[in-house]
Image (tube, rainbow, N blue to C red; front, top):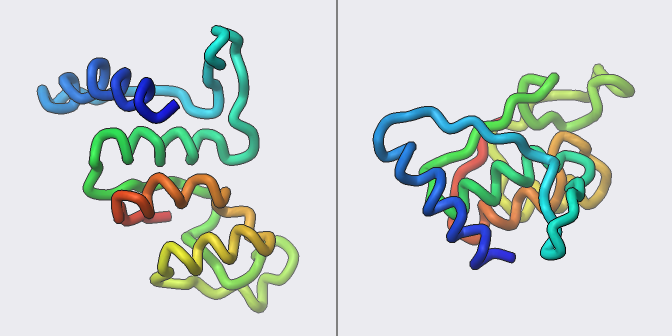
Amino acid sequence: LWGETRGHVQRLMAPALAAGQVVLAQGYIARSPEGKTVTLGREGSDFTAAIVSNCLDAQQMTVWKDVPGVLSANPKTDPSQASLLPLLSYEQAVRMTYYGATVLHPNTIRPLFDKRIPLYV
């Protein structure tokens, strides 16, 4: 519901941000068109942040994780192969998530890609 979401973000968040205020919002939890509470699933908070970033035409988006960035392997299962990847294209990030990287969800990338918003992990 991009049009409706963009309208809410522009009406409720943009003025506060323009006034220098901090806006605090939860992710992961959403509302269906019928008004029911729904969840966005794994990494839903990151997806929420990407949607809001897109709606605000953000200059960048930063997510905080329990790892120092996007790594070449899962540090919990293969620490010797887990080296930091300093830069990825949107396509590389989507490919990694598609093939099992769990640091980001593939849905998180699309709203950022559409507006070419850099993502920092």
